Length: 269
Image: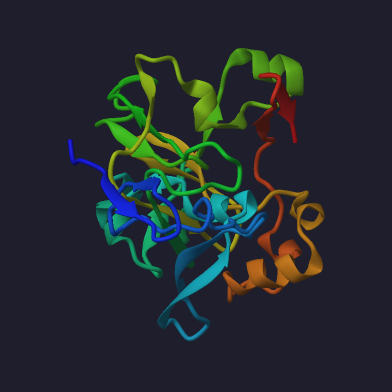
């Protein structure tokens, strides 16, 4: 241990003891901590490709609010999810506007719009919870459903044809968030450890398409989207869909939807 340095004063015979300080230490009080700005709105980069009225593929990247209603439009499929097209199975990452997609109803439809974002582990989220992916094992819902394991994004909704739905709603099926199918065996929740690109698809009207043999809905903001955004946010949101004039331009929702509540209960919308 270093010995203290003693300095003699000329006015007294006493000695004053002082210790050397490391040069990195600043005197004058405790260090000031930087103040963090509170309530800073979160934003995200959104990538869009769409087919214009002349049949040309257009694209842009835009920074917009990281709100759930925005993010839900871009995060239904992981990049490797296989979509049925008239040209054969195509991975989501290879899809382009203008491709002809096979619907679950046996129809074909022109793909008009593809939106994508990157899920980054540890990034701040507007809802506070980290975003998840969902992996569905092969044959989880029957033979070839899916044919191979498929990974879906946090906003995917699947067709639920449970007989209880007919009794409750008088309809053959309803659309339910993929998270409601998690059982820890056939459908598991994943926390990505590296950045993952996720996608969503939109047509001129609402559809259910086959992703690896699983029935998954195309994008639709929902019948109540008008009430969940301010006028300013609605304008930003619609700018992501250059081929749609208004929220009413998305048309009607094809099937009833289930939504999960904080209590764990299910609500029909």
